[in-house]
Image 1 (cartoon, helix red, strand yellow):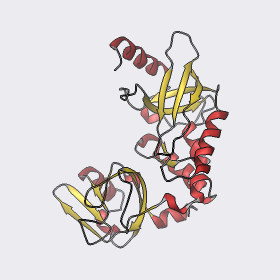
Image 2 (cartoon, rainbow, N blue to C red):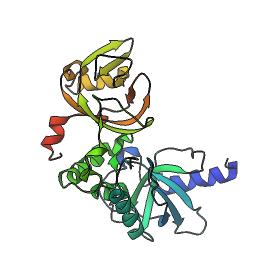
Image 3 (tube, rainbow, N blue to C red):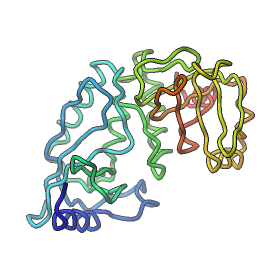
Length: 271
């Protein structure tokens, strides 16, 4: 656990390092660097987010260990994707960067989460996604559309993880290896509601088949976007997020970007 003085230094450093609020996190343009990329942990054969160490450009600022938002490398990703992640982060070593925090509190390992921008404005997560060195995590909503657009191009060109079909979890079949980050695809069997929760079911047996849950606010957002949940019945959809085992695969979506119709993904040139 951090001592208060260290935590305070970290938060002050982040406020100085952040070029703008969350609404401008993914804005185009150059940034004034505050750190340089010092090292990155090699990806393990597990579901991981990239972990990067940043050295300060000014001696008074602290060294930061950050968990990169916007990208997840699932455990089922092959060796090529892990090699691509290692190679790209190694090439970026020593590059000036600016860190934009997405959370104020460090995790239990003392790491902070957020976005990394290079001096020219390029995002580190986008570079990794473009190489297929992971899949887009859209839980950080300010950059979700950009992450998905970069991922779609990598999918169309079958780079990295998109060379392999096993990256997908079939939502119409029994799932294994949960809990985990899931990139799921399947045909919706039915849509129902209980209380303030909407259930998207991928089979008729609620004790074993996959279910995606939507809280009231997210269901309302889909309605406002012209895609009411009940319209999904019988459609092929793609979902992403952290799933657990609870009478079959159970996944609660936290943003509309985590659910797409397969036909819309195909229109973007993806597989």
